[in-house]
Image (cartoon, rainbow, N blue to C red; front, side, top):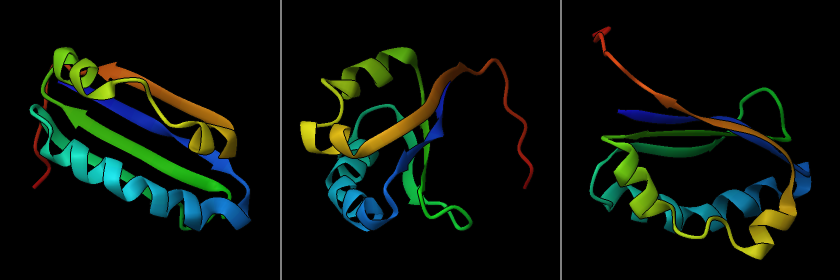
Length: 95
């Protein structure tokens, strides 16, 4: 399993537009083979921060979906980013 997690920073005045522009990507990802979870969401404390969380069955599934990445408009809105991929060796349910 692969987890992609982190956050990006955008101008607070552009955050809602950025999130609205992500709806199509989220819908595509959630239908993609190997996608277990995919979320891009506004942070509840920091008005500049957008949280990223993805969970995939494999690195192959991530790469098959990834394509060329965000478009120029979205890329231009990102002021900073801290996002990483994590290879997961084991899982324990908390529920």
